[in-house]
Image 1 (cartoon, rainbow, N blue to C red):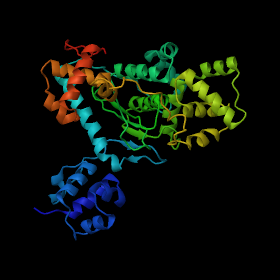
Image 2: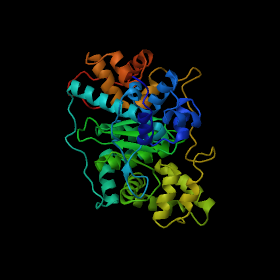
Image 3: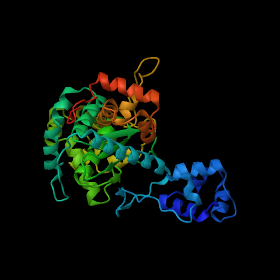
Image 4: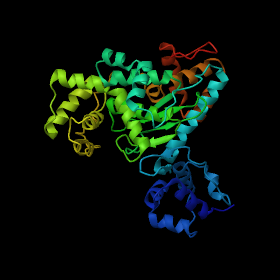
Amino acid sequence: MSFNPSVLQKLIEARGLSVAEASYAAGMSAKKLQSTIAGENTPTKNQIINLAERLAVPAHAFFMSDYDPSPSQIIDFRAAKSVALKYGKDAHRFQHIIEIRNFLAALYKRLDWDAPESLFNIDLNSNPEQFAASVSQILQLGKIRQETNTKSDFYKLFRNRVENLGIYVIQDHNFSPEIDGFALYHDSFTSNLIFINSAKRNHGVKSFTLAHELSHIFGKRSAITNNYQYDNDIETFANDFAASLLIPRDELIDEITKQKFHFFDYNVAVSSATRLSNIFKTSVSAMLVRLAKLGYADNNYPSRFIAGFGKDSFLDSQKPPGGGGKNGPDPGVIDLAYLGSRAVSVLTSALAQGLTTQFEIFEHTGLSKKRIDGLVTIAKEKSLVKESPHAIAF
């Protein structure tokens, strides 16, 4: 069998990579890649392996007469017209998260745990304020907002409440920065997953992304979105729902009236939004958008503020100093933060009951033996390992 350049060209187009991105992934010049696509050059073994990883396909795909990658499960709502997402340079990362989701669903079935029969159902004709109020009551967000002092503490409890609904919440910082997060919906409630991008984002931003993606799960959509784009009805609804869930209108108005916040120019508005974001444990960006939509702040302030995303001085990028001591966090801590309590409970419970092996977990998640051992230890400490065949409380 010989290398098939037509398959390479087909996969680059299917994934939505530019020539520059594909050549960089392969470790060759753009000119060399072009000659490879034209059939004038055969890539080296390492270049083929690198391309296979970046394009999220097996290396042998390039030696087949034809190869069709698995269709995208995610709809891209980041523009006025929704289309199936082309994974781009994050193809292997998307496929990895999907593989983890599918593995967790398989383990859940082996465990024979009870699953929720249904989640909330919403449509775009619903009132996002009223729907958010119902969800907030179920999640008890008002209570955890009062009981937590920091955005970090609020996010952790909010994430846990969402996981208790039967939704995996995974976060990572290795995705491209323009991706806020995405939702993977499945009609089986053992398979719903929300991914949160933590790169250049503090806990206030992650809470807003979690609320936004939760709207997509309730709307039965696998979707990738940008938190602050309002290009279509679906995005507008998801953003309004997230803002209403995290920043209830009546409570916001009470705070503004009680503490006499002002918004008469940009700097004052940002200062007030920053203080209010700390009260409501959300992002400054979300607060500015909410204030503008309610008529308190100038409509141009949010876009002016968000233009600073990625800069070291951007308020929604700044994170509190990390802990963990001079030797770093204990084994398992980082992976628990990455996978979330629900996923860790499924993995470690299946392992404890002999329903999976460390090698199988490694195959599907990439976790080394040391990291799995760390997860088992911390899962026992936090009572995440379940022995009952129908236990689902975390």
